[in-house]
Image (tube, rainbow, N blue to C red; front, side):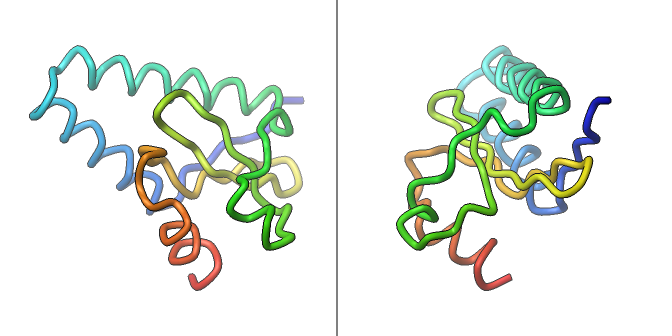
Amino acid sequence: MPFKVFLTADATRDLEELYQYLSGHESPDKAAYVLDKTENVLDNLSAFPDRGSYPKELLTLGIRDYREIFFKPYRLIYRVLNQSVYIYIIADGRRDMQALLKRRLLEG
């Protein structure tokens, strides 16, 4: 049975901002490509939610509640709960991920 995949409000905002940035600073084709790739990742997570790895920034703290999927340079950080997958972050992996993860997952 497929898992349901949900984007949190933060992840939805991440995706919208990423799309707008790429459309305005690179090209609409690049923005569409990233959106399509994200949709493919979400579809795959529905079928295989445990396929991602543990984010190294959280693993060093002993936290194994979250997983991540890469499609360079982007990272999707998610959590599997029951029969659902919750996407918390969609971000360029070149960002300060330590601060982002701390702010969104550990303090929020």
